[in-house]
Length: 83
Image (cartoon, rainbow, N blue to C red; front, side, top):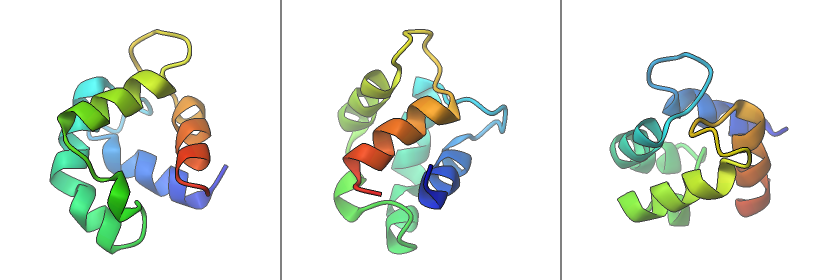
């Protein structure tokens, strides 16, 4: 998995429990997205609104448990962002 996926996952994991919830993904992308894009951790076009963040979460949650593991998250962002 890419280093960028790990950096992005850790930035979005607000409670640092090793998983991402929908609320974390939406909130963190809204508050940190522009900064992460400026640092090159996230493509500028990857910073969207709450609906975009929610859709990203749904696409990544392959097992339907309503939390994202690093592996689920990395598989999606590596493919979607071309890492």
